[in-house]
Image (cartoon, rainbow, N blue to C red; front, side, top):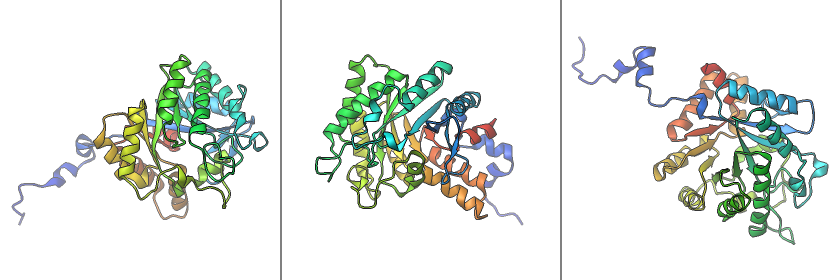
Length: 329
């Protein structure tokens, strides 16, 4: 005998089309940003710790950008892997006008003017110590104010190369206001700032540091002196508020998967565009578990992205971008 139940939520789950009608969170290709690694070579070089991801040569980079547009992915984020012989303690190669990043951005914008190009504003790809800024004279700390001065110069050069959006990822105090003033003074009032506003000192970054060659030694200064403590949430709200007050156009929470509560809190506290970075460790752990047969690859991948969107992210930086967008088609 049927139960006398007036409310039966399962009625809205009984077929695929009904489930689609009542679905609350929808992930689209337009929500995705595709991070791409580049290096100084014609050939691609596989990144062992990131299955299916390579450091791209110029031809492959341009093919990837063309593919992004075909898949309706609106933006790519470019990360250079610099020859170690060009690195030093002050990252001076960052200011060579002919360096890899500037050439790549210029060529992308020449070929694909409608593709949004986002560039990282940080020194870690260029420094031999792997930090995002300049070290103090005694090497005991990462200097804040002198680093900000250098980052302003870097942001302007990236804009000159054609970057649509510059993304300071260093977590130095006051860098957003300084970068905004520097861009405006150089005539780049329309260049956007995507701020890594809540970037945590996370264990999930390991494969990325393999990819760009920015690992630091075991006895070096801890990045926890400038990146955020994973235990803190209220601090993230303060960082986001400060960056928006200083002129950020978009704010990022990084990483994404372990910080869904932070994404939700930021979404509830402000109406600015919000990005979340599904970082290399999140990507690689899904691959690793799937290869061992412990997880269903596609379902886990898709669930992880929907969770980030559901938490409140407007856009997601993810290494899954192209394959997910292709399947959506």
